[in-house]
Length: 228
Image (cartoon, one colour):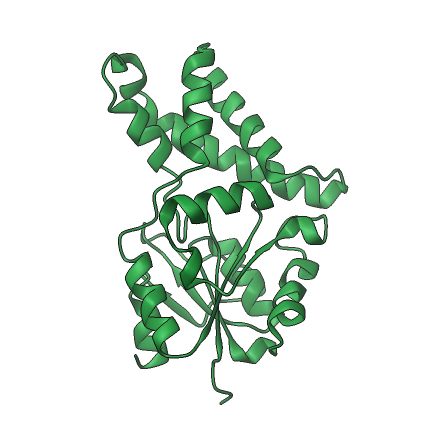
C-alpha cells in the first residue's frame, strides 16, 4: 500500500468547534434568553450553512462561505424568534475566531515532527480561514490552507479535492483526508483519498457511494493510522 505523505483536514467541525461561538455567547452575563436556546440555534445554523452550500454547488449560484454562514445564522435566529442585531454581530464575530478542539495543536506538531505535509481544505473563504488559523495559533504547523474559492464551488465537487494534488504535489492515495462531516469523508473516499471520519457524535455512517476507510471518535486516531 502506498505510504501516506500528506494529511489534509477539513476545518469547520473537524479542527474548529462550530458550536463554540454560540456556547461562548450563551455564557455571557445577561444572555439568559439566548442561553435557553443556544444549542438549537447552533445546530440550525450549522445545518442551514451546509444545506445552502450544497444547493449553491448544485445550482451554480456560488457565493463565498461567509455569506452562506450569515444566511444560515439569520435562518436559525428567525426560527428561534430572535431579532437582536447585537447578538447576531456577536455570534458572527466569534465564528471568525472559533476555538480549535483541544487535541489539534499537539496533533499537528506530531505530524510536523514526523515530516508529513499538513494542510486544511475547506469551504471557508480565505479571510475566514486566515482569522481562524491565526486565532488558534496553528499557522506555523500548517504547510497550506486551501479554500474552495480557488475553484468557485463548494464541496463535495471533485474540483475542490483536485486542489490537494495541484498544491501539495501528491497523489490521492498518498493523502489521509480527515473530516468530521460524513458526506465530506464519503466524497473524499470516492475521490481516492485515504480517509478518516471523525465521528464525535457516534452517528451512523452515511449511505453514499464512498465510504471512509477509518472511523473514530476523535482526531487522536490520526496517530494510530500513521503509526505515530
